Length: 273
Image 1 (cartoon, rainbow, N blue to C red):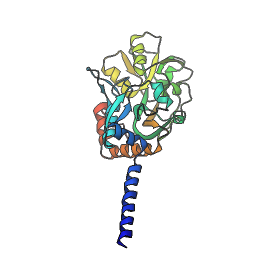
Image 2 (cartoon, rainbow, N blue to C red; image 1 turned 180 degrees about the vertical axis):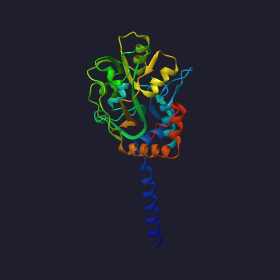
Image 3 (spheres, rainbow, N blue to C red; image 1 turned 135 degrees about the horizontal axis):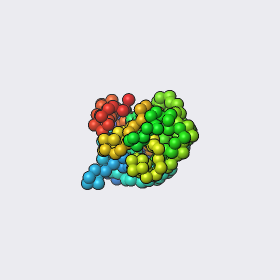
Image 4 (tube, rainbow, N blue to C red; image 1 turned 90 degrees about the horizontal axis):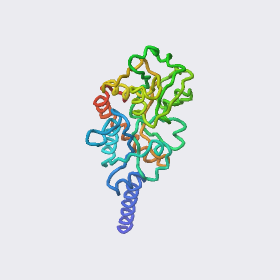
């Protein structure tokens, strides 16, 4: 009888150990073997993400990625792939997740999963100082407008934007623009500020626009918002269990005030609710 009880006890212990080991996702298992998580970064514009004077990554997205890693029990290192490489999915373990101010869309979800929204971002229209022809957003109809390529800003101007995950209703206020594409948001902003590309305006995030104004660039924000986009952590869509872990971690960061505090630090306002 005692031998039977011993065998049952050993079986229970083995089962508990296996369940514990199997409970983590493949992504976390690999990261623990590696010693850290790897996050993709897109340092194209502060306060979302950029580089400090020493060349180190900094900004809200970087801080959120580090907080997410801490919540998952691991440090985070960063890689800087191209925007298109992130969008394409099929990362094959080159990085584990991306906190790059990306909006979930049905098209993007063909390659990626978006387990957790961590911020909402107002999209705005920006013109040069002294532009008296564009006083309202609708005044930009028929004008030449610059945007970062393969973004929701481009989709908005093309009137084919589809947002979900808690987005507020919006209307297309700009008709028949000539859309000029740029590799990143800062290129578009500088082209507008320097009046070097024949732009009448650009569409970008409120945070990026306000940072340009604060930096003294000769631009102004046209009153009003085009739409509010939810920004989510992106993962490879082959890792659903890791998605559940990311979702729980982001929810914990929201509940304990970490996301709110980081938003106030970098944007001066809580954009996480």
